[in-house]
Image (cartoon, rainbow, N blue to C red; front, side, top):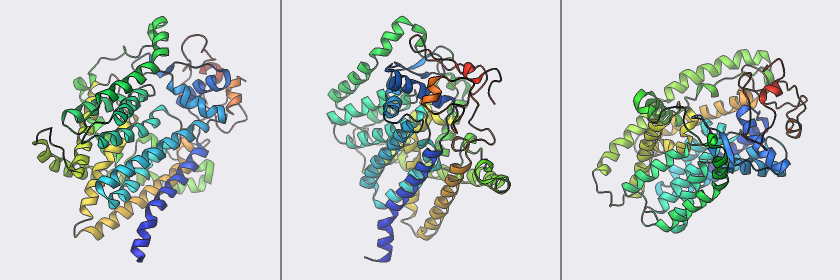
Length: 472
């Protein structure tokens, strides 16, 4: 075996190991914010009190996200280890499984070179690893997105009862965690109409039955308390009227494959971990990297998506009944997921935020994998390898900075996730969030009431935990 072959054989395991080590460090340093407390309370009620809450988080349009899956996913790990990091370990496992599924499909469809690019642009993406290491209901969606690609790809030639059932059930159950699952509903319909997957209708019925059965407790709760049903605050199709939500969603799609992160991911303060002197050096450096270098990197997915669209136009003229080649199929999958993203953002009754489309993160990365893979087979290959190495190096620099200085992974500092509790509620004591803890829940604003609707789920509101002084 030559030295080059030996290096390539270790590259994939090496990249995966580096990403996993960073994610584990982030998980260990994870802090608890108000949204995480929302999830932890449902899990704590199940693990400590045996009370299963059939409602998800409060939905932005009003009411609650339907279903009790949130309590199960958070309460199960807490029953084994009563620590806020326990459910995050499950989140990280979901991300690892998602990457394994994507790696399998990408390797089969595009080859080994594409697997390496997937490891760089997906697995070691700061967007992905940042979301893998803290508790938020949108972070489970990465696995659902990978399952969607896996199930559709396996059914590109003929339907399968198992794959159709898993696909529908996965999307339906994810709807109990966050309404971003609607993006995959739109995507599935578009891909079916264009012949990119052949559903097995028996499997679709089975997956639908699982979804409906899991919602029965919520339906019973909604029968007695109709106000828990989500919706009602904002108009439907507001995105088409104001236009900006559609444009914003498209921009996030492009940013996912770049190093141009959301502003909330670029709040660095190294003082708590490294001291004020290091912070004076590193904070300006990361500000420049995040705003200038990150902004320049945004051009790469723009070029990649344009390249994919140019090649997709030929496929668009062919009948939907004709099955594309594996490479064309991957291009088409990315394009139709982007179309579904636009539809989901147009129909969303709330303002589009960066986490609303994360369920399609895998598809947003595919154009980069396809484009860079094509360039690496041309005479520009040496330049492409150097550019990819530079991109990877910058990703690792950002990841190290996030581990040490991002607000979700540090105690104290600018815009810190922390407050001093003024109560001895057993919830805070059991989870280690009391006055002696180095992980404290942060109320987003004074008077923001945390609650799980209706008896017997009521616990003290956040304002009671804050005390007279409110949030610090």
